Image (cartoon, rainbow, N blue to C red; front, side):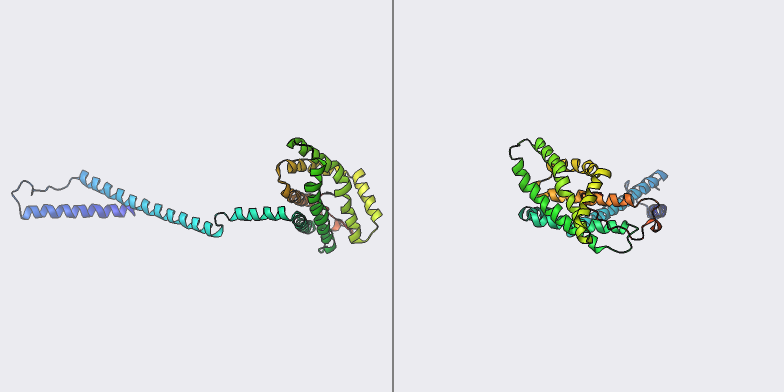
Length: 289
């Protein structure tokens, strides 16, 4: 394209120069300013180069204008999809809800997390041939009441009373972490998971408690719990605002359940290795069975 335009420009310059030269030859003017000579090759090349510069500048200008127009369109589209301040308004609304209704917010957060996480775990379990609604309901009730509402009461009402005299933030976080891990976990957080399983599947609660004791003594339940939840709780009590601590617990347990499910079903496990009548199994979010 540039070569063709250069040829056209050269031809036009030659024609114009020839016309001026012919006019001067046919009707000569004796004035010193009337005489025009034929342009040299150097002049032609100079004019051609100037013409190319103009063409290139125009092309660059059009490209720049097109890019600016596309950028403006993208900016306008982004502003239409996510108006300025929209995220801030949503965040403020969520924070107000968690502050005004901590028990309701805790129940909704923990139960929703439990429903989604258990559904994903059942989907990944090759031994599960159909969706177990009883197990999912048990997860929702256990997580919503124990891990949602009870955590909100413990973290926001009981802990401030127990540790009222501690004013050092780091020491306070360490004390709450140790209390939550070594007292709350074995006595409050973990046993209800086994009891809820017994109620849903209608087998004796004594058997559920025995299963919990067996998991603690032989399967390292508390060690698994402490390996994850001691650092997670310390982070929660040090950096997370009080009204978002239950949401933090729900988020950590959600991703932990996904990881645990993927690890448990990884490898060459197939349907043939599943028992004929698999034992009912409740994936408690913080029990980590």
